[in-house]
Image 1: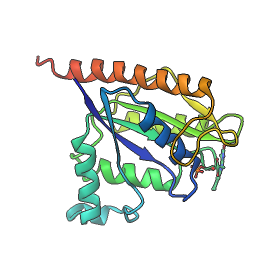
Image 2 (image 1 turned 180 degrees about the vertical axis):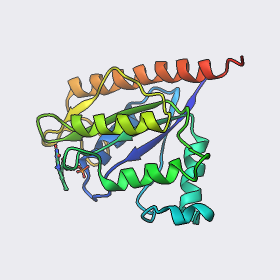
Image 3 (image 1 turned 90 degrees about the horizontal axis):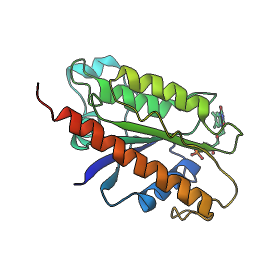
Image 4 (image 1 turned 120 degrees about the vertical axis):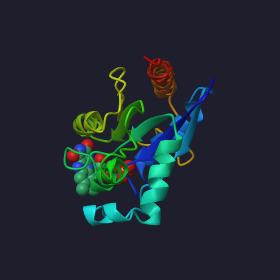
Length: 189
Ligand code: FNR
C-alpha cells in the first residue's frame, strides 16, 4: 500500500539548500511513499479577515493538504525559529476555525543549515506548532542535517554515502510511522 506525502519547504530562495534536501528526499523515498511538493510561496500574508471568504490560493493550499496522507516539513532556521513564510502557510492551513487541514496527518520534520546545530531549534519550534494543529509527529529519528559544500547538488543528488544512508533510513522510519498512525485511525470504536 502506498501513501501520499505532502512536502513543504520553508525557503523561497532560488538557491535554497533546504530545497536541495527536499529534492534528495524525493529521490531516496521508498516506493510506498509518494512525495508531492506543496508550494507555499504564493500565499498572501494570512489575516483572519480572509476566514469569511478564503481566496483561491488559500483554498488550493488547504485542498492540497487535505488530499495527502502525511506531511514532511523541510525547514531552514531563521533567528532560531522557522521562517515566517512557513508559519504563514501553517496558519492558512489551520483556519478557518474548525477546518484545520493538518489534524491527524502524521508528520516528520527535518532541515539543513551550515550551522553546527543544523536547524535543531527551528525544528523544536515547528514541533510545538505541529502539536497544536494536532499532527502526530515522528519523534525519532530526528534529522538535523549539517550542510557542507557540494553535499547535495541542484537535482537532489547526494554526494556522500553516509548522508544517503541516513536520509533513506529516516524516510523508511517515517513510512513505518505513517502505516502505524493511519492504520490506527482506521479503527472505528
Ligand atoms: C539565517 N541563518 C541561520 N542559520 C542557522 O543555523 N540558525 C539561524 O538561526 C539562522 N538565522 C538566519 C536568519 C535569517 C533571516 C537568514 C536569512 C539566515 C542562515 C541560514 O541557515 C542559511 O541562510 C540557509 O541557507 C537558509 O536555508 P535556505 O534558504 O538556503 O534553504
